[in-house]
Image 1 (cartoon, rainbow, N blue to C red):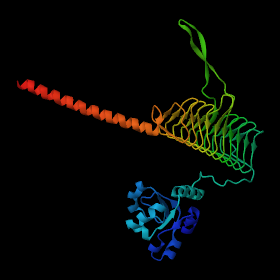
Image 2: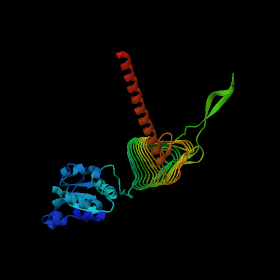
Image 3: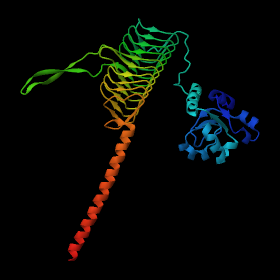
Image 4: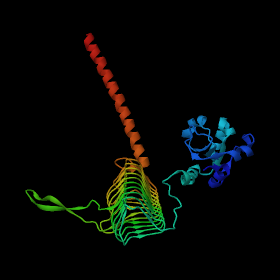
Length: 384
C-alpha cells in the first residue's frame, strides 16, 4: 500500500515548500507515492525520509526520497544548499517533525508490521489456540486472541481486543483492560492489573515477590548477630495504568502489602527493574537498565537515563531528569537534572569536573617542571 503527498501533508499538518522548484509540479507531485519510511542516507523515490537534526546533514547529498519531512527552520538552508532532490522531492515542512515521524510510523505500521496491532477488533468470539489452557472461570472479551501454550488461571479477566502471544502465563485474578498486547512469554503473577492498551514485550514479569527478608538474630560471641533470613511474603499487587509500554525482560515486583504502581502513559525500556512498593508517575520514561529500589518513586514525566539507579525510598520530582549512569541517593526536586555518582545537580556536577580538570592540568604542568629541573641538575653533576 502506498500513500500520496496529499495524504502525508494532511496527516502532518505540513506545507509543501518547494512546489515552485519542481518542473511540472502539479503532475509530478500527484505522481509521487511512498510505501515505506527510510533512513535519510540512500533513500529512494518510493520512500519517505526525515531531516530535522543538523547532525544528519552529511546524509543529504545521497538522499533522493519521494517525500522529505523537515522542520520549518530547515527550509531556507535546504533550498540554499542546491541539492538535486530539491527539484524532484516533495519537501513538506511542519511545526514538529519529530511528532510527525511518530504519527507516520503508526500509519505505516498498520500496513507493514505484523506486531503493530493498532485498531484491534472488538467483535467475535475469542480465538483460543488448541494448546492453550484456559480456566473455566476466566472471562475473555470480544475479539480476544490467545496464542499457543498460554496458561490462563482462575478468575482472570481479559478485555476486548487483547492479544496474547505464545507462552504467556496469567495467574489467578489477573485483570487486563482492552486492546492489551502481551508478546511471547510474558508472565503476570496473581492479582496483577493492567489498564487499556498496555504493551508488554517478550519476557516481562509483573507481580513476582519483592526482595524482602527479615534478619534472624541469634546470640553470638560478640552479641546478637545474623544467623539467617526470614522471607517476607508479599501480599500486594502490581497496578499498571492505560497506554503503558514495557520493553523486553522488564520486571516489576509486587508490593509488600499495597500496590506497586506504574502510572498511565509511562514507558519502560528493556531490562528495567521496579522494586516492591515503588511508584512510577504518569508519562515517566525509564531507559534501559534502570533500577528503582523498593519504595522509590518518580513523579510525572520524569526522564531517567540508562543504567541509572534510584535507591530505597528516594523521590524524583515531577519533570525532573536523571542522567545516564547516575546513582540517586537523595531526593531530586521537581524540574531539576541530577547526574553523576555521587549524584549532583547538573550545573554543580560539571562545575566540579571543570575544577578537577584545572587542578589536574596544573599538577601535570608542575610535575613536568619538576622533572625538567631534576634532569638539568643531573646533567650538571655528570659534567663536573
